[in-house]
Image (cartoon, rainbow, N blue to C red):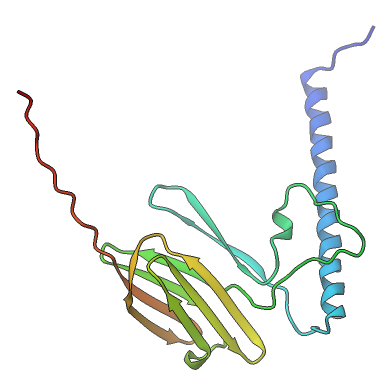
Length: 187
């Protein structure tokens, strides 16, 4: 007759399984980094650094919002490793995604982008009512990012300032038509 496992034994088994999963994930991450390095050397791009980061901010609704930046795919965010063949390459971008912060005011919207090393003559901006594209190329470095804006803006109102690698673009928010309502009485 088999004896049932107690709560402590079951928790111990699940912890061991979790540690095995974490260990497996760490092995995969190390393999991915080495594969990226080998691919980078094969492409003769020895001086291009790997950049990956994220920023977290809290939305007005109180929810966390995570934004990534850099030039590598989010390899380490995958829960389950994809099935890869030995000859498969890991894709990473030539351009970097700059760190972006968006500040919403009542009348305006401010987008702040970090473009270290870029001069104002190196930066090209394109804005529409719902998006902003930032592109910069200088000294064999490249930044590129298309941002979906959280509200509708007047693209012609754009004013940009650049100082010491920090770009600040201010837009006027498109005015919302006030909804008029009339009280309806019931006869």
